[in-house]
Length: 105
Image 1: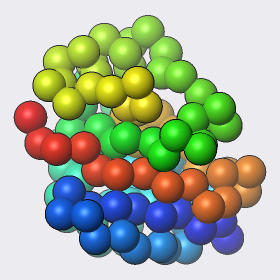
Image 2 (image 1 turned 120 degrees about the vertical axis):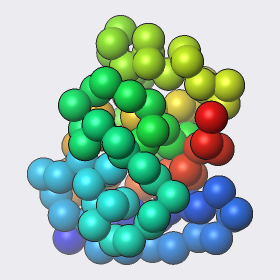
Image 3 (image 1 turned 180 degrees about the horizontal axis):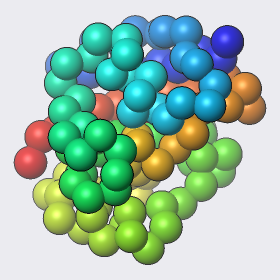
């Protein structure tokens, strides 16, 4: 199983076993990180699963598509490394991925 490192809004860093084939959002939710709301459940209709991807991983994770980018525009905390965690599928190639949960808008 690939590892996923999650940094909370308070800066607490935890590494968890992630399940390949699930999204980063599902893996975060399934590992009891309550501050990631993910209100739409991954249907790309909100931005409550906003994360900042560690710069070292941006090339592997890739840029958001147009629909995702439109939703991210609504956040005061959008950065160049912003992604919606529901749009990143966890794979073995992403073993070691590190994300920080973005501040709540």
